[in-house]
Image (cartoon, rainbow, N blue to C red; front, side):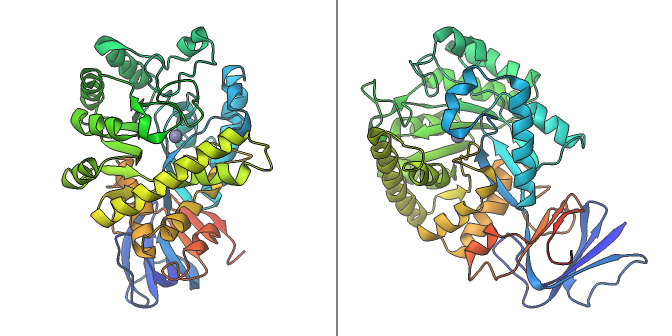
Length: 414
Ligand SMILES: [Zn+2]
């Protein structure tokens, strides 16, 4: 079964674009041929989708989000809410993401996502291609093990792992339950932690794990051909991530110049996650955040901006991730806002598109399948009205979505 899409201009996701009107021929779920309009010979019975006034891009990829399946302003409900409700809620969010042109995403921590991924892949519910970490891995008293939760609950989640054997076992359990990336909390101190010496100051955050534990965890994950993503705020966590072989560094701010240089020299990948803090700032008034929370989010986003601008200048490689956690405050279908924010903070539109398609696909280990408009890749394709090289906000209003070769949304011809 063939389809051909004609467009005003194609933006390939690798930093290049077509000069003029362009066409993409799709066979089943793969890109078969690309070329200037009129240059491709059509096989018989090819379905023609003429999007002649629109710009074509590869589907957007969110390299860091969470399907928690509880209201984002009540994350403590993770401790009590029934799992069947959580997964159904997450499935609703997954469909909305796909409809907005986010055709692949990595859930960097949630127990429900490996099974959501299964159901999507088996065709039971619609949603993006998912890479799922499953439950976080965290040391006792580490990144997500807040002292306000009962310790028994934290143990019951399976999140806690300590010692070399403990972290190896935790990775093996994730493999068993279908995770296809491993997420580990590298730095101690949440953005609302006011009880510890490291507390809420990004510069004071310390490592959650010893280097030996990190190396063991990474070794076990790599034996299983899985990448490891590390939540890293503060210099020590980022250094340990580099020393320990962590594949994808999340957040990556409040770091020294020497560490920044290492990120460049070692070709590390850092995931942006501006949206999370941005949407907290947006929610602060309507959701009646405490003043200390407002101050903390403000401090973190300011520091993140300083580091982003310096790191971008030095040549750090960024993938785009949002760290969105769900409705109502952090809707995962608002992921394209991240493109606008990285442009506000200094990326060119082309750099932002490459970061949120090609490089994010690499963060998901899916660079051979998706991330660019290229012969042989899966047909995950979107269309927008304006030229995204002039107006990056147009990515927040996707008009057409083709996923795995099938039309999911067509606001142009329907
Ligand atoms: Zn996150």
